[in-house]
Image (cartoon, rainbow, N blue to C red; front, side, top):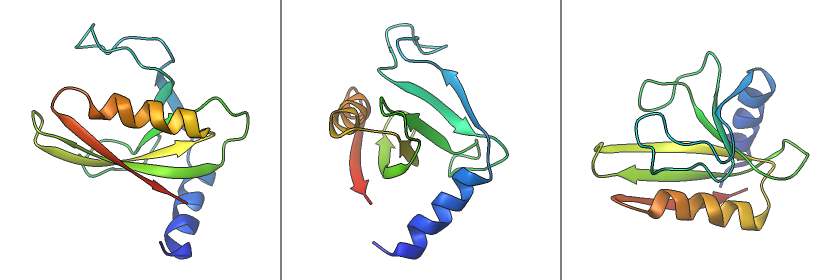
Length: 112
């Protein structure tokens, strides 16, 4: 993948505030059976493909570097999104992909 792609994402991360609105082990506000395995949030003052701020997963590493993105498709919502993965180990990345591959969704990981 193009180095320019990752540099633009790095710039978005560096110039945006990351808000964690669903901390690790919290439940989804509308679906109490869905528990977040890692911190999940968004980049303030950005817009993703769904018209909402860009989604971000924050893993267990102390560094906040961008290691990957995950592309998700949700058949119930009829939606496709890209989510940024920061500070993620290989195990974190797998957990995130598994989270998005349950129910009526699927995910593909794109690593830097």
